[in-house]
Length: 304
Image (cartoon, rainbow, N blue to C red; front, top):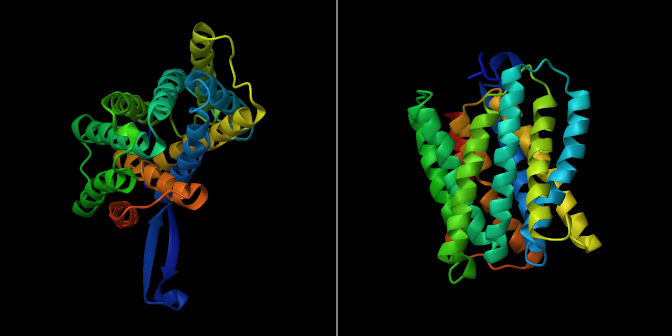
């Protein structure tokens, strides 16, 4: 791995010298990962509705077009000295990102956000966890392990919808494939060095966009949705998706791949809340239980 050194932390001090009794240290990596969670959820919330009316490839192209603009700004202000390895992993991450987003949007078009998102989330968080355990030799604490396990269970509970057409085998299979690819994306992003700056992330978005437009051009006459509202919603989704990538990379500076991935994967629970609050969708009792479990999982991971 290209990361070393102690994790960055925010201090919430109640030490005797500060007039309190104790000091709680909250990892900054968890803060970034939680912010990434909300960004992913908002991105999928905006994009999922468009996939019902337009081709998934058109939505993917628009999302990644927005990403180029966002990452160009990030690269301007986040200078660094990327190595050949950083750029190579950025390019490979771009290929994975393009494939993953396309597969996920195909799953949304055939089912729903509430069933495809949790399937992808469970798989995409499991892949980095297995990588950390089997390849990197990481050994999380008991509290962190409980948080990781609870997080996986909470994802499924919070987003399962009884009787949803998206529970069909095809939609769930495609969502699972998307999860595998996103898990690989997370692993590739973890190999971008701390001193690389924003250039590898810009390259990542460019490669993803080139893949998306090649698929879109080969399968239809248009690159982007024709309706202005659909294009706008997809573009906004792309802004949030790009922000999520930046936040995820920042989280990796001070946190393990497994922990950051599971925290970020709680986006499925946030997506359910957005559906309830903004689309008037019903929340079942097990979804409420899953949302509570997600919060507890993040807390356990943070203190673990």
